[in-house]
Length: 311
Image 1 (cartoon, rainbow, N blue to C red):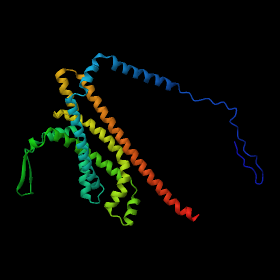
Image 2 (image 1 turned 120 degrees about the vertical axis):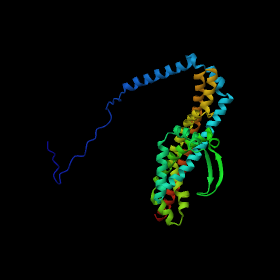
Image 3 (image 1 turned 180 degrees about the horizontal axis):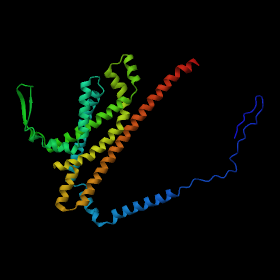
Image 4 (image 1 turned 90 degrees about the horizontal axis):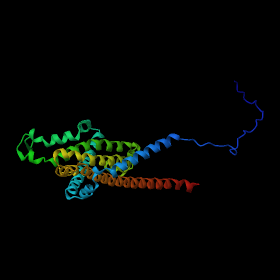
């Protein structure tokens, strides 16, 4: 097949377009969508039927213990564990991220080693280790290196099950938070930092006013996911007999043998807390996005004004 081009000077006919009128369109059919939807609806109906009609669920027992004082005390302990572990973990994570971004090779190496270790060891193993630290170090002392001892404590009484749980959760969180914060800071273009330094801002001002506000938009979503993960990780402390939400439910069903209803109580409260955390995270993300959008719009208007005057 050969394609010939029109000779020079020869007039060509204008392209002919076909009108859409009279064209019969046939919508794309998706029969498997209907089949898959029917399977999903039947599965949901069977699950709801199981929840409603199964007498072993004992919804009456569930309602009796939903606001039981022992359950609410465990719920408060779970919130304390989550909050303390996140605050301590984020504080250490910020320091580790700064060390990873430092020009000092010793700081970078120590930070990398910390992150490698605590990201690789499961939090449950850490909790058990910290709880049994007294077998390795019977007494904890504060002293001047190679000098006199200033203070001394019994390690067994110093590290309770609650302290061991906080250490295990917070140190694990610090490793993950450091990497998230570092990634957020590195996502901000380097040119903005250089421009801030050129106009006379110090490095601290540049970090506080230019880099961190932009990095927060990137850091907040994974930190929010980490918060919900931390809420679930707190259930691990039940192995240390720390009276969190799950352990409180376990103590109750060990007395009345109502295992399923008490586990449903714990599940319901975990879902409530996770939902609240998710809503708060979404609100923070919306606020950060709207503030960033308004700043971009104002910057665009400022850039437009000189060109408008010139015209």
